[in-house]
Image (cartoon, rainbow, N blue to C red; front, side, top):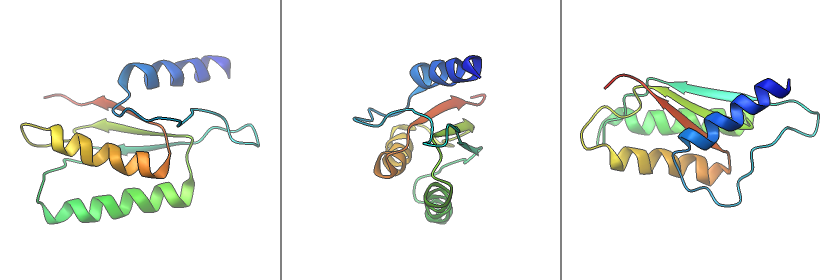
Length: 106
């Protein structure tokens, strides 16, 4: 169990996508640790799918209340990708859930 916890912390420190203040990575009161993974979002600013994506992510975060959210694969599907990164990190900051990202191939 300690190895998993150490791995999660290492991933969080190395790939944190936002400057989340006062958001702690910690176990639930029951001693469990829940991770929500969002993969291959392919975010494109202005796409009608962005609103659906935001709603889905918010629903999962509110319903599941994970200890950590992980974005994997192709998150942003446009260049430059700073705005999608900002928009995505805001969702997790508002939910006060730590988030990290492991990007897919460019």
